[in-house]
Image (cartoon, rainbow, N blue to C red):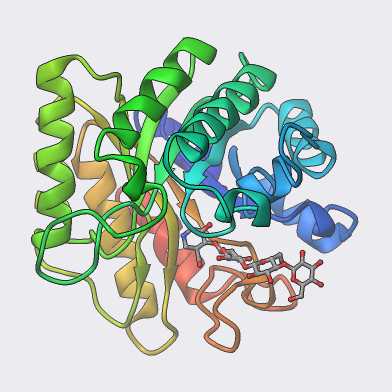
Length: 301
Ligand code: G3I
């Protein structure tokens, strides 16, 4: 009857949405959130610029509005994101070398400790791989502190909150390609060396089609011994939108270790993809064909 309830009936999966603290006073928005979803991700409020705007000065006011809402509603919380080259605070952007390394590890430790016990899964590192055919890391000031920055971040997060699942999250990984293979090789390496990693998020900001090896890609990661999730799903509008949503939903259901799906907003008017109408509810909060298609897929259709 709802996305969250139907997902829960499929092996205890969740169906979630990205939430903006500033919209929690909008009753249409909150009614849909509470009715349909059993997991939330903060769209911006847990990012580095939001949680540590000045060095060593941590602010959780907006993040806590989302955490408190989710906790009161019994929703799982995905923490997003401890480290990302984008949306870094200005003070951190001006650092480099060991000073930046120390600041980023401190950030991971402080935020994960603050939310210890409340976060189901953390995106520890977001979008660290390059687009295109290299399969390598994205150049960034974080990467320039040394290639081991990702594993250092995962180890710090594990120490700070041993109960949270620790995930790597990225986009343009929605099939078997050079970028997803680069990440696959990193996860395989981490598993072989005992670096703590539990899950990989596939953002899935999709156009009018989805790669035919989408499910096979999820499965190859699952076969490494990590859970996988669809973390930021949205799909370009057009005649194929409902089909793409259903294909992605079925792919997750067909992979035993695909534990949940998150859409990146509730109504089309809430989306970062302005004018693209990529979500499951229209701007008035009505269910779209894509909604019905996802619900049918969750119910085995
Ligand atoms: O909060 C300020 C506000 O004070 C100011 O008046 C306003 C003026 O532009 O900007 C507001 O900040 C904006 C913020 O969203 C909150 O609305 C930023 O400019 C804007 O850049 C930011 O965009 C977010 C984007 O990440 C930043 O890169 C989107 O909402 C958010 O949906 C998007 O999410 C990312 C994921 O974190 C990672 N994967 C890709 C995904 C889509 O880009």
